[in-house]
Image (cartoon, rainbow, N blue to C red; front, top):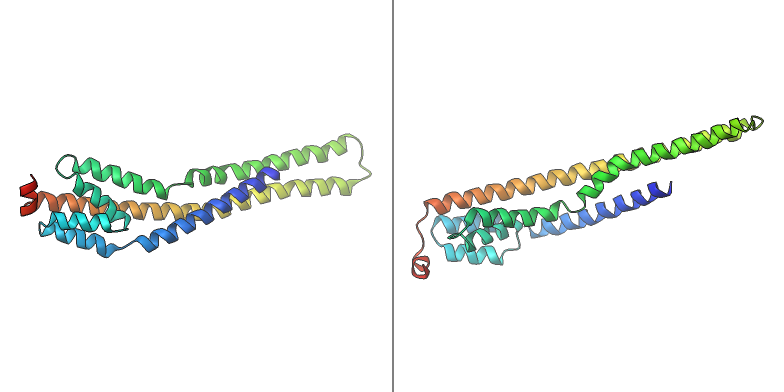
Length: 197
């Protein structure tokens, strides 16, 4: 039961930390900044688009900023690297939750098996005059399995939720990055960019 208690505390702490992270990310999300950056790019005002993207706190706008800064050398690679760095923040702790979902039922089963061994050990020792103690031991052993399954179930729900949030963030970044590449391919450079070139 002690390892199960440790896994439940670990799971709860990770879920709380992830919810705080998502709350902060939601406050940072500004789709209007991304739309405005792409609007500047469409008009050929790349310097303005870069400045706005760099100043924005939106994760997608920050990805676009890296692409705009390195658009002449390695646009796709810059976008990919920036997106990977942003998305890595979303998956933090998820591997631990996946491990807990898998491990908790096995720990519960292990507790049940060891409890059953102890209970049947009483029978082997011919202490059948105390059947209540034996059935009580079996009942106590089954609690470990129930506890392990409960931990797995209550960890699986936030894990799936975090996975869906990660997928939504990835789609949003992919869409904006693709839009930026398309617009840069069809947009003539602004006068200021020609001078710097």
